[in-house]
Amino acid sequence: MFGVDWSNSQTLWLNVTNLALGIATLLAFGVLAYGLFGDLLAMRKRSHVMGKLDEELRNLVGAGSGAHLMPVEGMGLTMADGGEPLPPAAKADPAPSKVFKPRKRK
Image (spheres, rainbow, N blue to C red):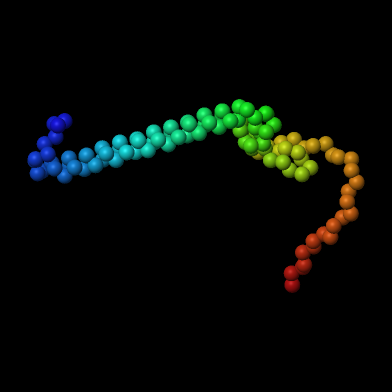
């Protein structure tokens, strides 16, 4: 079969090694195909579910360009590249809280 002489004792272990490597390669391709198919199926399911959500909720759960948004007090939504600060709000500041001052070392 395929020009392999299994009865030759000088090439038997070479043939066995080649067979084992061939099986390992086929198994690796099978695992790769299974993972790729699973990812594509998950992406299809996610896009189907996300298609029903409105734009704001889609950004909050991280689909599309809103995946790197993070709400920060006083800045609004900031992005990984810096974001834009909010204009200052006109409200009275609460009483200052106790400020922590580190002790001097001796």
